[in-house]
Amino acid sequence: MSVIEDLTRSLGEAVLTGDRITERYRSDASLTGRNLPSAVVRPASTTEVATALSICNAHRRSVVPQGGMTGLAGGANPDAGDFVISMERLSGIEEIDAAAATMTVLAGTPLEVAQRAAEDAGFLLPIDLGARGSCQIGGNLATNAGGIRVIRNGVARDNVLGIEVVLADGTVVSSLNKMIKNNTGYDLRQFFIGSEGTLGIITCAVLRLRPLPAGRLTALCALDNYTHVVSFLKRAQRELSGLSAFEAMWESYFRFNCEAEGRKFFETSPAFAVILEQDIHGKDGEREQFEAFLGQALEDGLIGDALIAQSEKEAQTFWRVREGHAMDRLLPSLVNLDVSLPIGDIGRFAEECGMALSMRFPSAHVSFFGHVGDSNLHIAFSVPDADEESAHQVDAVVYPLVAAYHGSISAEHGIGTLKRDFLDQSRSAAELDVMRRIKNALDPNGILNPGKVLR
Image (cartoon, rainbow, N blue to C red; front, top):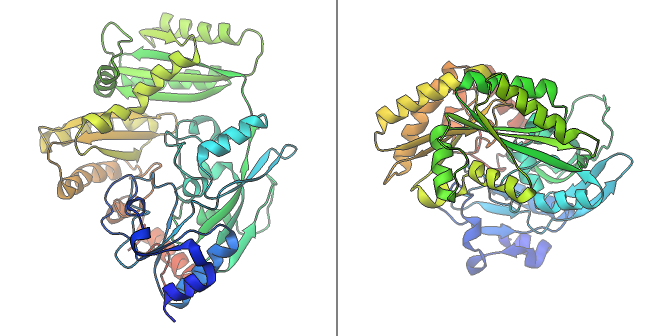
């Protein structure tokens, strides 16, 4: 019996072949995928995921897990002959435990759906990404997603208490723990968070919830230099107990996106623009304290100007500039590189990196933005008529420089295939060897997302 016959006999209409396999299964948001899979399995339960993996493992057929396909590292792209296990039907909120402040959620649930369910129950789900409407919880955990609120609540792995995962041979490992303290040997959940589907497929998770803020105060600030950005950040962390976001945009990035959105916030485009956000909880004087904090920063010369959003709609005009979606439309072959560096070095790195890229690609658009408070910097790069070869040349310019600054080649997008060949710029030979040992132990036949993260 062939593997497709075996899968169809066990899972029926959940198995797609031939013309039923649509383009959505070809590539993640990096648009680097070139092949449709041989088959797509759309399980609706953990048991069906286990059945699919058991069959594929027995037939030695490689499997690529797919979520919302919003990744930018090629981690969900199938090769010709691969089978895809799509989590799109494994969706839903299993439970919200108000006493434990936890949510148990299936892996295929869109992040925004989970966020709204938490809000309806009076809680905040702190994981937040620009792709919230499309990305899925399982993919968020498999890539250890970051996002805009890491400065307050940490990356994805910091918000996971329990996890359920299916191993390559179909074994279900269910550890849906709700406790913050659980010191019982190896922390198995951390093997799978950030593993990009190479060690197992996450099917369910217990996420930590936080108190729901009564609202947020948002300011857009103009600064003269990166030294002031760091000083402003440290002061905000010290004096604003509800600081939830600190987003910095270098002048070229801010100016480009302001023009694209038809906005002019300041008389002249500042060297740096910072979005500062604070959660509020309905206590007296919170807005006055926020305004006083900004006023003192102005008086001390840390910031040159500040605009405080007077409504949620106005705050969103700030965020639309920061999210930079117009770049996807206006810049051909846009590449968004995602790196992490010691906070104090980010300014010097950006200056050196910008000069190196401009020398190598004189016609390129190069601009920088980042979360800064969590050491994450993004590089927006576009050159006319770019191809995969030129994109690889960009990597060869940027990643050795990241290594020279003792940084990381991936802050939040993962490794996938696009960063795999540069992983040794951030990880030692000993670390890579340990990763391979873990991979070989949990997936001895090498069927799970082969070629991703590690060769």
